[in-house]
Length: 153
Image 1 (tube, rainbow, N blue to C red):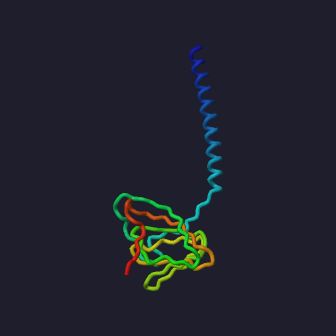
Image 2: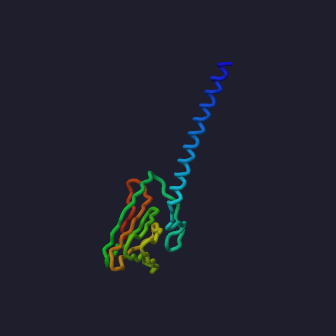
Image 3: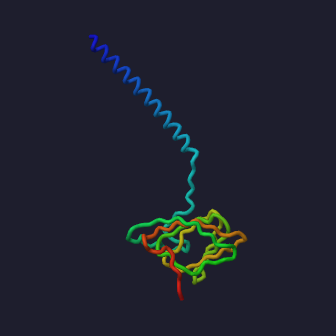
């Protein structure tokens, strides 16, 4: 009988410890959830087409390489005509950017705007505001291959 009492006492202590731990985990989970409720997300752009409405091509094969690049274009300066052979997207952090194609398609990009770049389609950009244009660009490239190529006439 004494052995049963010891076993029962051990079980009660074990259950008490488990209940305490579960309560502690519950408190931690609630704190984590409360902290997560203060975090917000905002999708700046999500699309299966580039900014001119053309469908994005399938992803390339090869060893993937992601680059995140801050590009600063001084006020009044322009990028030469170029192409991106891979998926490219950016968010304008400051300034005013105008992107254009040789066919006359244009896109005005304001601070905070996301843009899905043209893939394998010639385009150029210019900083048209009074401040330098600063854009954070994400390139989904292939290791060892350039993410931007100049268009040569």
